[in-house]
Length: 203
Image (cartoon, helix red, strand yellow):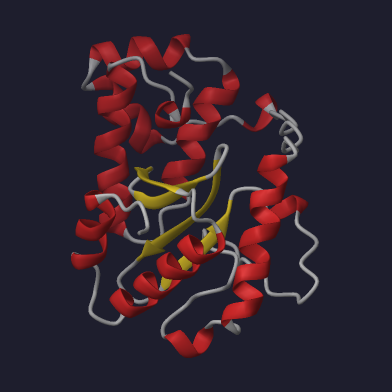
């Protein structure tokens, strides 16, 4: 009997109708390939751990995503790991079961991802490159900070790299609604002394 997490059940139940069979199918294959898998909700997605995180599934308004934690180290013999910019998944945008490769191939990828964790292979550290000369704070953000003294003081204390992470997050918003929401969240987090990616910090 697979060890399932009720939180994943709820996550799938709340997904769009088109997404539910996709998520259920991928979940089934993950358990089939890795009977000892542990289910969790991480970063608002359904995450699967085996000697550490190794894959995740997610549902969006118009597509699903299936991603591998160490995809950069996988051989990708069948050329399916084709994540697009702006998409978190490695099997492209999945809108139906027809978008997925054969089950046996998916299982091969899952087992390869498992093996990377079994053997303790780690992702190389990300290169930290910060071009401080291009760190320009937009007027709209300066105005928002000026209305929150605590946030303004904390933003000034952040090193250039942490400032840039917030600025990139704001400028990458594709809609005005998303931009405004990120602005509100950014001011809130900064006033609390939180860096942009504070959720990913090891506790």
